[in-house]
Image: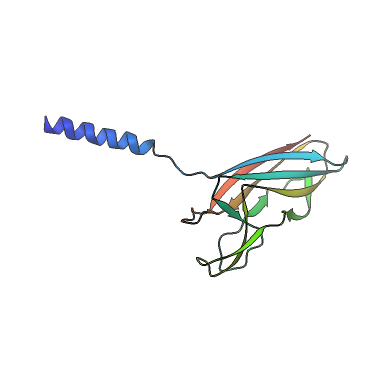
Length: 149
């Protein structure tokens, strides 16, 4: 009887552990808008849960992991300039002993592209780190695919 109870307990804990919630305080969405026959703008939006923040692309060395966009090379389009971002909140964080720039709630990054083809799909990945006032989650990479029509 003790063996059955022990086995049932282990199974229960295993199932409970499998359903434990993994924190994902940032969700990403993507869109593209043609501004002419040969140019489009990609919109890459991070929606951030309350009390969390992600960092700007413009973080000095020695601080948190900055948000970084990498676009897969393609003959169908070319990047025009760098990925832009709105004005970030700047605050001293004692964890990093420096001023850092970050975004709360949501942020939309933009990337202009020159089209070599009428329609294409822009693929790439974004690396980012998310923190709140108690913890930082490990840096994460998310792949994206944005159709441009």
